[in-house]
Image 1: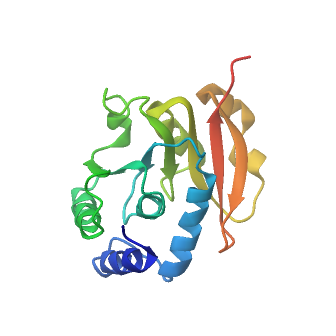
Image 2: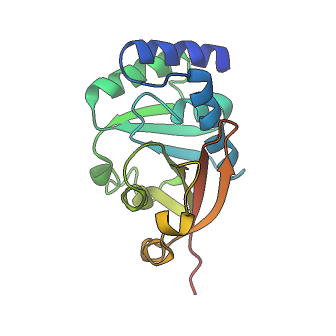
Length: 190
């Protein structure tokens, strides 16, 4: 089973190939740890939107070895690098890398409503990210997204728009690095 040392080595190789622009990989891994902390204990399947250089998806896969993780990106070069990273970390049996646009993948039977959690870091605008994540969620699923360290959550996450997506903001988890992630749950029927 890989550890954070192996993970940092793989992330460094991704950075050298231009897939990651992080100035501090330990800080980036620490921030990704907030995604791990925000996952409900019942989580078994996670999909990471726009995985790019593998954050937070690879961190989740390394730290929670019982999960099945799907990393997505529409850029084939990125998914090729992610496949190499997954192989290097010895996780090909439980980490899948998929090339494709998430707006199309979310309609495919093998992905639609199949995940306990969907994660996104630097994917897009707040509501766009949630609208892309929503089709992947199974019953009781959650979406976990990166948030800026400050700002008014009611402005970033308007309740009316969340309601239209069938989601509600349930919690925020602050990373040791000062950033935070927000967790959104499927709204209960009224």
